[in-house]
Length: 308
Image (cartoon, rainbow, N blue to C red):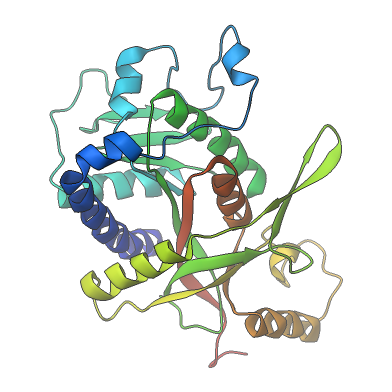
C-alpha cells in the first residue's frame, strides 16, 4: 500500500511535466527537427562493432521497426522495481490518454507501445515516455543506463530527459515530501560519482540542470495537490542500504547513535534533504552523454524537526 501511494504521488508531478513538454513539442516540432539535441554517445568504438546488442534489456538494436517505435521518446522514467514502473506507465497511459489496443503476445497483458520483462529489468513504453526499472544501488542503475543510452542513440532520439522516481530517506523535511534533487553528494561529501575503468578509479562530475529543477517545481506548484509538499534540495547518494545510510540495524555497525546524528546534521547543513542509492550515477552519467537528468523522490522519515 505504501509503495502504491508513493508512486501515485510522484507520478502526478511526472504527468504534469510530460503534458507541459508535450505541448511545447507539438508547437515547435519544426524547430526540434532542425535543432534537436540528438543523443550522441562519447564512445568511438560503437561505430566499428560488427554486432552490438543490449545484454540486459530486451530491446533489439537490429530491428528497425522497434527502433522507430522508440524514436519519439522524450522522457525516460526509471524506478527501483518492475511493479512501480509498470504502475507509472499505466497511470501515464490513462492520464495522457495514450491507451492502445493490446498487442498479441504482449507478456504484460497491457496495451503499451512496447514492453519487455526479464529476470533483471522490465520496461514499458507509453507514447513519448519509456518507463524501466533499475534495481537497487549504483552498479545496477549504471548497467541499465549504459543500455538505455545506447537504445536512445540507435533510435535517433533527441531532447531526452531522464527522470528517476522512487522512495528515499528524509533529512530535515516532513515525511511525504517530494524532493526534486538539485545536486548529489557521495562518500567524502563531494559532488562526484566514483566509478572505475581498467582497474583505475574514474571520477565523473555530478551536474544538474537547475532550470529543469525550477521547471519541475513550478509545474508541481501549479498542478499537484496542495497537500503534497514539493521541495528542491541536494541528495546524499549512499553505497549501500545499511552503513552507507547511517543505519543502526545492519549485521555490523562501528558507530554510535551520536555519530549517526552528527552525520545527519552535517548533511542537513550542506543543504541535503534526502538520501538514496542511485542519484550520483543517474546525474553524472546523464551529464556525460548529454541527456538532462533529474530525480524526484518521496520521503520516508529518517530525521526531521520532530524526530532527532
